[in-house]
Image 1 (tube, rainbow, N blue to C red):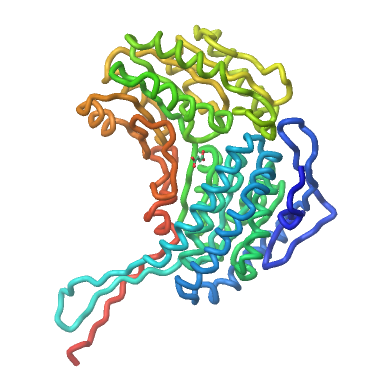
Image 2 (image 1 turned 135 degrees about the horizontal axis):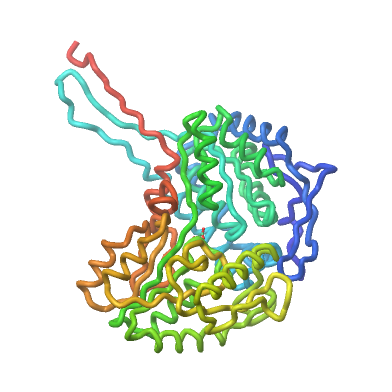
Length: 483
Ligand code: SIN
């Protein structure tokens, strides 16, 4: 498979320069476990350099008009679309998701750039009716300053643009440390940023294996004003604590434990289609994946039969192969963790309706699985699965479904299928989640506020609200006007 060589970065991109090093790390294809690239390993000194570069670049970038920044971001967006196929191939090779899904993610990620390039033009201030005739009160909005971020391997491209685009559109400069498992997509975005004319130091990419060391600099450095993270709740809590030392503004997109509720008045075929999309997208490796499927007792058996038939028809394999709908997990350790939870849940009484074991392809491939007779305290329901396993919990009343759904520390996404309008409102209002899909299994899109409640995070990404995370509000009180 040939990929345009202009998209290949072999080390970090800092202050408009590409960094090499004798210390390198391997990037492997999760499908085969084979090495696909060697990348220079960023260290603490390079991280400090990135902070200095972003600080130096800030005044000129901030001084540009929103329209000037939007024009540059628009070029970046156009280039992502032009190279969508190549970017998709890079993503499939390093992350494993099927090529059609990877290309879809590239388009989704690019859409954030287009959206925020435009939203940057609509960062309005306000005037406030004054309490005194000789005073005028106003609010102006300004970029927060240097932004640092850390993003995960499950969405190697869109999680970067979802943070970088609003930051850059608002007039901030930006440093990203992508997962060391998927650095190539991030470096390809940097290649395109350079081609688009984003000035040196405005967008910096640090690829390195020292997650703790780099993370410490990015959360504790006094010249960084804002820190944004997507990843696990455990790591997010640590990064919030580190950011407290310099009272940084933080945004956190953390773990989920999404309930997917099927009521007895649901359109069962639509619910199966939604469950398939929500549960098995990216081999179950999304924070918004259905993690527990709650089904009302009188439609339980019919739903399980339909879901089992649909999941059995999915094709597991290398994401580069035509027709594959489920790729490998990110690595074999992820597979071992999932399988251990399946086995522990079966030991507690869960029944395997489908799969329940590593796939015959070997390596990091897991068989798409359905477990019935699951209870909320089993490890497969209590913890975020991050794999292609659908645990099914039977319930009898609406109140019981809401109670089970909310019985978790997480509050990112929830889904339910029902037709009764009263039920639709009661359940929508009763679910303690930042996002609710009603008769929908996929809810992410650039125009909507993505984010969670409880231990699932702080702040929102995307939508008109996403840019507020990168803006400071400044109140101006102008007096002495009668003099
Ligand atoms: C995530 O899983 O972190 C993001 C999923 C999405 O944007 O749909």
